[in-house]
Image (cartoon, helix red, strand yellow):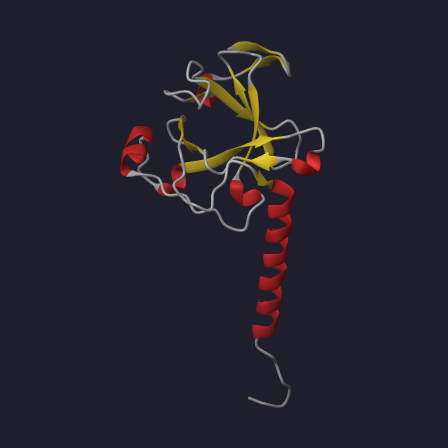
Length: 168
């Protein structure tokens, strides 16, 4: 089907790409149908475009694209609601707010989106993890993630077996 959007003009969305949020999103409970797409190759950011209101679109990102770890507990009720059978069928996104100074962009870790990629059903849940905030600075978390990755790489290099000629 074709949809008119304020940001992207007319877009065509195959039925199998529609993500259905039966309860909508927090603050937008009457909008249920969305599509996720990438407007820039190589970018970790995606758009969650409402198909019910062409003016409504959110920037989203998978938390592990800017954080080293993100622990989310999904209840049995939420798993059942989404029809999740295998954990690997769940994709997590968080909504990003981008102010005028993009270095100050934040992600809402407390209200992640969980989507079952098998049936395209989604739900925004409330994280009970005390470490998850509504406004986490993406740039700061990205720097922490990079530092931990470099630290792990150094540790792996120092643990690598050494080959010494003449022994063995």
